[in-house]
Image (cartoon, rainbow, N blue to C red; front, top):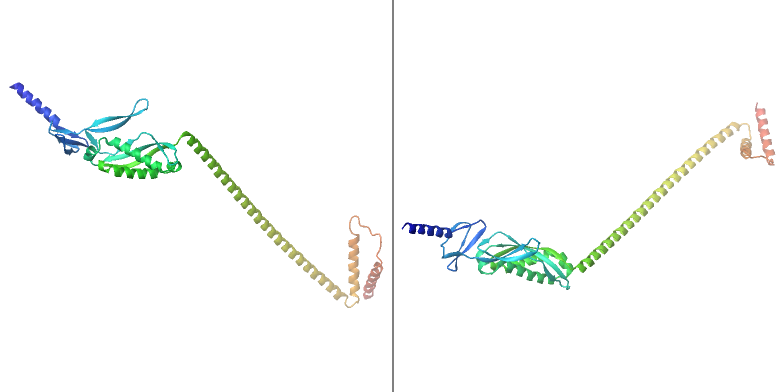
Length: 324
């Protein structure tokens, strides 16, 4: 009797341990009763009927790397479904562009399960189905673009691929949040040709910039020389004007002075007669002085008119003597 009681207690403990299911936060468990969907267990403490109720196991493809860095995938059985956003790194694949160039692409996909029941019953292996769907649509999208467009249209490809996948996986209870193309690698010979093309383009731009710089420099230099020549000519013009005005003013002052001197001589000799002879004689003597002045000047003749001038001077002397 005592042994039977121990057996019942042990059986109860096993029953309770099998019937208690603890689900972590952001996880759910699909429960089937006698092979038929019963309910979804939320996070926390849950109780099921052992033997009659059982968690539904699902296939889940997991990508891993070994110690040598080689990537491989395995299929695991899971009874708990993670509701958090999941990132899936797709293996690199070759895609042919519109202009028949084979390029290598690998992508990242961010998705989240929003309906656990659909994710379990509407698709057999959710990660593998999403991977194949992504690869197929990626080939279609890249096949519509040539190589140059593929290299510069990552955002466009990401946006269109995300929209296609989100619509296709909606019935699986999955929300595709983001798609990212990590690398787009063309063949080696294409890379070499592109590098040469880029180098040639950079050299061309450098030559254009250098030519434009020399052109602007020449234009600025010519404009500077033109401005300097204009300023120099304007300065010379102003200097010549000022110089001419100074010479004219000096001549006017000199003429006024000479006029005043002559007028005074005329007034002084007006009552003595013949002031004109006096003036002529004085001018003649000044001219003779200018002729004979200088280091090497020598008078080798006497002009004939000098006798007349000397007689005028003698007449002036007699005039002053008579006045005395």
